[in-house]
Image 1 (cartoon, rainbow, N blue to C red):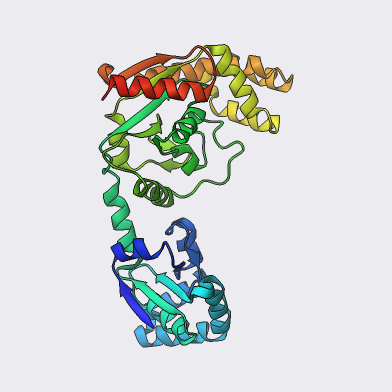
Image 2 (image 1 turned 180 degrees about the vertical axis):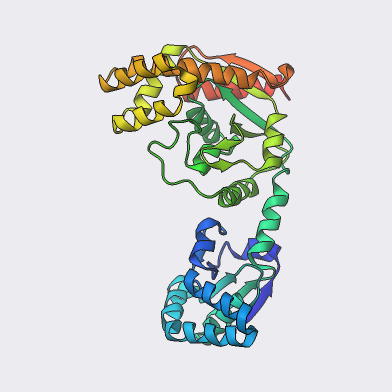
Length: 344
């Protein structure tokens, strides 16, 4: 049985029915509905070949070629579908526009008694919803502060006490600096990052504050959606302050469990802004395992850069808060009380 569903039904049914993306592996790897499995009708080379045939010989010849390619792989695809469907015996399928690829796969899987639901408009309809959601939040609160203040840990603590939090750096697999890729998995493509952000926003109440860390428009290679970033830039910033020795200690603990060469390479990326002499001193300190001194030198650049970035915001939107020690759980509660008494 094959049923066509709209995007609203898709969002509900996917909670209990597995999703299968039947687009090519490269389309899937660039971006997909989070949680979807990939059973491609055609791989990238096959899809290119069918496309060339369509262009040169017409639709019928392209369909014939597609059938000849898929035919020997039918059992393999059905087996994969059955494994994903499990005892529920149901799947939600989508391709780019909800056309021939998903229709053909739904027909094939239904012959194996798998009940299939097709997303009308395909992945394109999902992306339209994603883009339209980026300016939805009514209250975004920004957690700012110089490098090493423990902002990520404070956000985690805020989440633990019931606040709405979105970890943008966690979604981007990057800490947002020249050192940001160290210890992280490969970054998603920007469109998939948008999908991940959308999925987080779906969990939120839009009229209740949503905490995010202060970020530039680009985190590593990932771009924050323009509408969401515009909202961030016009939101209140709670600038947490922590003594430098606490910050250095945190950075040393965080970044020195890796190959020193990765740290040296990261320092080299900011040579122009750090300055030749400071760069040389920082690299020598890393080589000598004097990580405290290296971090102290490197912070001269990052502190200046953050101060410069903050100066571009409206002064009345900046709320400084100084912490006496580096205790994220304690500081999160202090911050929450301060924010609600100051802004609301």
